[in-house]
Amino acid sequence: MKVVHVAVGVVRRGTQVFISLRADNAHQGGKWEFPGGKVEDNETVLDALRRELQEEIGILVQSSEPLLIIEHDYGDKLVKLDVHAVSAFNGEPEGKENQQTRWVEVSALEASEFPAANVAIIDALQQKYLK
Image (tube, helix red, strand yellow):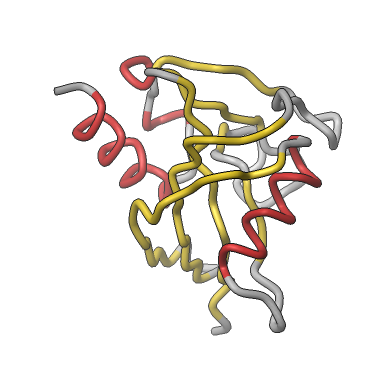
């Protein structure tokens, strides 16, 4: 089974992060996610992160750092999530693909509302920012 390599951006403002709702017809549809998308064959993870966040939520990434890498088997799909914390960006994030979006406190993130692969991201954020 082919691994889908995804660049994920945890866009943070203070103790809040920006999340978006997956389309109902998408894999893991109807769940909240951190924005991002597939890394193309000719791209670095950072190039993919910048491109995807500009396309999906309309921001220009100024500064980011690696947060963690997650490999998850959904049974029908293998994903490798290259997760970066985005600490500086230009623009105000919004749903550019008609997706519902919102800012949420890290402390209010509910793992059950996200795809299973995202649980480790929520754990990492809550450990890092809720000390």
